[in-house]
Image (cartoon, helix red, strand yellow):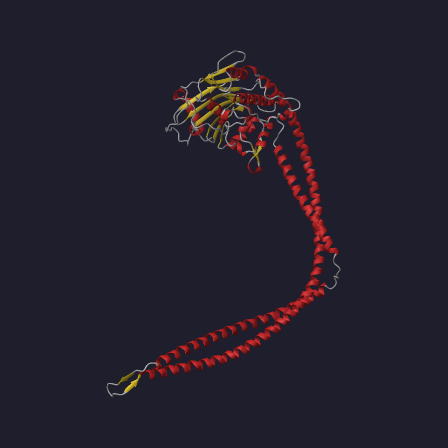
Length: 580
């Protein structure tokens, strides 16, 4: 049971405090946006849930403190961001520095653990919000059936998320999801083994056909192997010699190419010299000596030099042609040798090919026999493994079937409660009968227009809580309802809805309701009226710091409340900031 909620802005020195009674608590005001929803969200935030406070609230500056009782013992829990302190009944103070740690503490305190499938299909402990979901209705997005005030619910598989309800009823334990996942793993493993079994069986059929087609003697395999080795050595020697000859042939051909290239250049030079002779013959130039008066013919001297160059080139060409002739003869000889080697190599290859075919047949037969035996062994292993898996699946299925049978009984009881609350809230658009009763399970949500959506959500919530209370396996968490009134309902429907919540529903759970314009209409049930006004507005985030704590949260309210309980709040801050 919630006893007292206190919210401290450790930057602005503002605070808010509210006490709750065991029965029905109404938080009301004449206007919206004054902080009613923030109070309700703070209750779950301090208990480890990640909530959406809205743009007006910066939770980083806030220290939220909640006093609650559990099994008649009083606890105090404090939270700022992801840091927690819990004061137990014996005044032992525990510190927790992340949500996973506080979740473990709370699950141990509540006496049951909720597990859920998270990312990568791994089973993990559910975050604290899953302990509170069956007891809470929010007003986000026009009263949609799934709560929108909590962060990161979408990271969990929705069907598995819905199954978390059954942990509250005591029929799902730590091993339920493990059983489901193990059965799925075994089924996939069996499917893979069946595929391998089928492939192995088909392969054996093919091998059987191949083996029966052989008609050979296995006695000469050693002799064939010996011949193969002898011919291989001879082949390697011939091939080595042939490669040396090929290398020599390449060198000779390279030399021949160089000779042809040089001869070609000599012919080109000769042509150039002949062109010079022609030019000289066409020129007639004489020069007289100034001393002896002798007459010199200049072109004749040049002509002599040109003729000399031509003779030299022709002589060198003759030498090169002689070398070329000898080199061609040598190349022809080497090519003949290479041809002989190629014939010898080809002959060995043909012999080896014949031996290899025979040997290959022998070895293939032996290989098939060996492969066949291995496959038969593998086939037997697959058969045994499949049988073992089927036994395991059968055992797991029996356990799951037993649990599902319990779930079916619980689902039926839930439909009875739902039918009762449909009648209480005057819901006529959905009729529960024997032929459709199985459709109404705890995970089923309802969608309608704004007026009926409220009543459907309330009927579902109270059916879930009544179901949990009926089986008495879960903790009686407080019921928290945000804004059950709406402008889409008539005044009469609004009044009837609130009257049902306050007076007609008889549950042992503490109830906290936030609504506008609530008035006391009767005294049939004891409840507490908590009224807020515009003057109690949300605190503004100011840049004042008293303790160097990074980014503390702020909620509603004013400095006067902080000053009235200054000593108490300073002690809370001291406890929270002191390492235990």
